[in-house]
Amino acid sequence: MSIRLADQIIHKAAWLYYAHGLRQDEVARALNISRASVATYLRRARETGIVTISTSTQLFAEDGLARRLEDALRLDSVWVVPTAGDAAMASDVPVVAANVFLGLIDRGARIGVAWGQTVYTIADLMAHADLQDVTVVQLCGNLGAPYSYRPDECTMEIARRLNAKGLNFYAPLVLSTEQLAAALRAEPVIRDQLDGIASCDIALFSVGTTGPGSHIVRCGAIDRSELDALRRVGGVCVIAGRVIDASGQAVDCSYNRRLISADLDAIRAISKRLVVVQDADKFEALKAAIRGGFCTHLVVDADMARRLLDDTTLKTSRN
Image 1: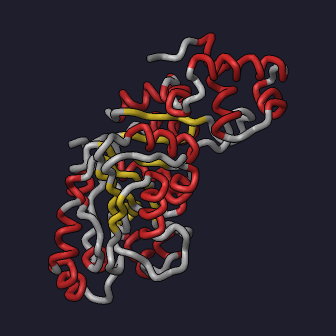
Image 2: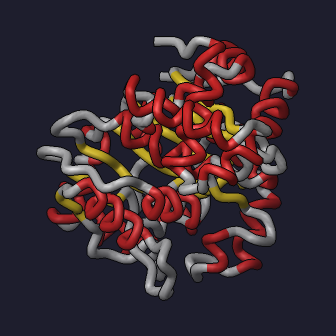
């Protein structure tokens, strides 16, 4: 149900107060209204049920920019968050994404989770929910680096928040040789887990870059010189550890063949694919993911949404 224009201020007040934990005087300053008005709006929010965060995410889904982006890119749903700098809604991409993600999960769902700082931030912001018969599946092998946003950490934190069953990959993300990776993928326990990814109902991931700050370099999955070489032959985006080109296809390289990670077709087979991007330098990577058909649901800020709309070369390849 659409939010009436007259009720939008109530939703904004509820969002800031309940999702961000702002005091009433801080909400008043952010929205340029009196504290008495904030108290009135919050009371009305409680009385009408607006305080449920899943309802308040409509603020971001009903934005005209979001509607245009859905139509232009043929996406199922888009949420556009004001770019950081808006006093009332600054830096809300992971907050909105956490609540959108919860709203997409049905009873008995099987969830595929990638990794990285964005995914872990979303996990850390998620409310606790006692969902029934939900399984959270790690989409790729693990890393030895001591980062909180490793694949296993992201998977298990989301499983913990949902009171769900978590399935980790007990294998490295990258093997030393292609032969060793092929042999490990053929092991029944690994093969069964990889084969089961396509049966997931929803996937949550961000996109990585192949630029200087790439997370697969920082975590030790690949060295800088090898990734630079992949970039020179067209690698622009990283999804679940895999390097893809601007058209959304896997780069034919030894690195990709040494991975224990979801097959790209298996990811595309998942019906709901929620992509969350909050960094401006991920524009080219996001375009590649969209072209490759990896995105059905999208959370971005307004600047990124405008850049996507203004890019006349962007074409989707939805399955």
